[in-house]
Image (cartoon, rainbow, N blue to C red; front, side, top):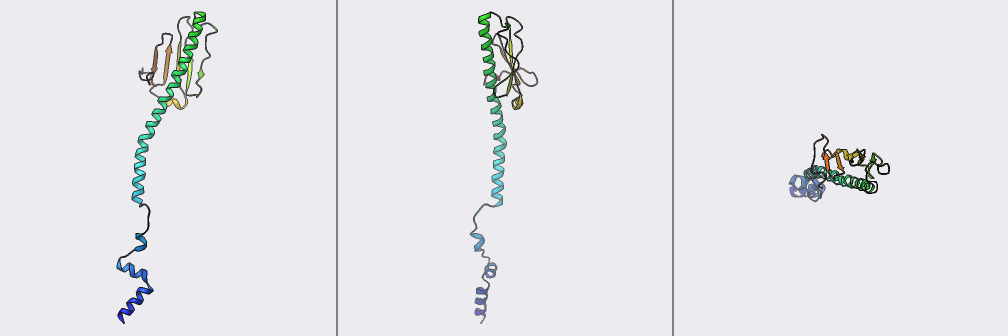
Length: 163
């Protein structure tokens, strides 16, 4: 009779019997990620992002310097062509409009001094989001092809013209 009662309990309450016996078949079959696994993954992604994002931003700022170099070289070529015709940099036909914003808007090109017949200086100043490039805040080129650059604290930099 005792065995019969036990078998009735097992049939009537199978879940309770398994729980007493320490079996959890429904829970063992569940698939997925645990919270710890998910937190470890989020931490790894966060570490990688904290390294990659500043590196990417630095690369973007550095690559935009090429635009300043290109526009300064264009201005230099134009005024040198005028010098070849008029033998003076300050001829009215040669003086470029100033300031001029580059096509993408990251630099402003300024003609500082074609006031002399024999000298000129063009300066590219970082503006907008490029102003975050404190290493090469201004880049300059003159009639002797002297290329200089200053950081945001007006200290000369040598890396700006050598990408």
